[in-house]
Image 1 (cartoon, rainbow, N blue to C red):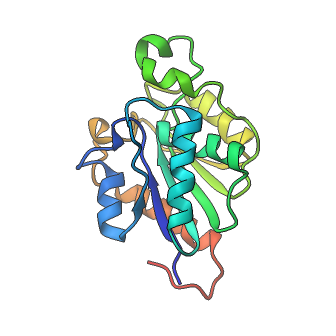
Image 2: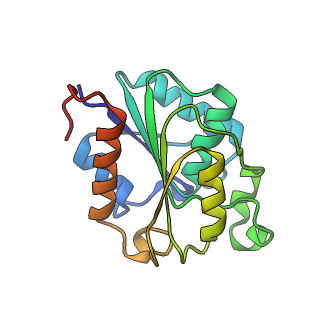
Length: 190
């Protein structure tokens, strides 16, 4: 059986044209819906992610974007992961520790400090050289700390609708590669 994708949005719950929403519809993915998608905290957002994981049967692959990446790494630290989580695709991590984050996106600041421990499952970080919310060097340091592979997306902005990434075919290729790498060969995949 193919692992189920769990979409873990960032601030604002990713809109209708965001690649996360399109993937949810295309792949029948589960989705984490926060009570307040504009006010993340490690405890509340992690608790909701844990609820969705427990309610979603089978093996799972988490797909986070922006503050959703921080949700996944905080959840992994607070809950120790989950035996059914096969891996995570972490796209455009937001740097909640940036000195200017209080001005840039103050609602993200409560997600600091960012856990910098190895994740208990394989992960792939996709980072852009022109992301306004994280420098490429900082994303590289996060990937190294999380013991994750890193893909340089080039000058791709925040890898969201505003940067031209509604439908994101290159992301689907990465997702497919992750699914193949993290599941046994006898498992059927999309």
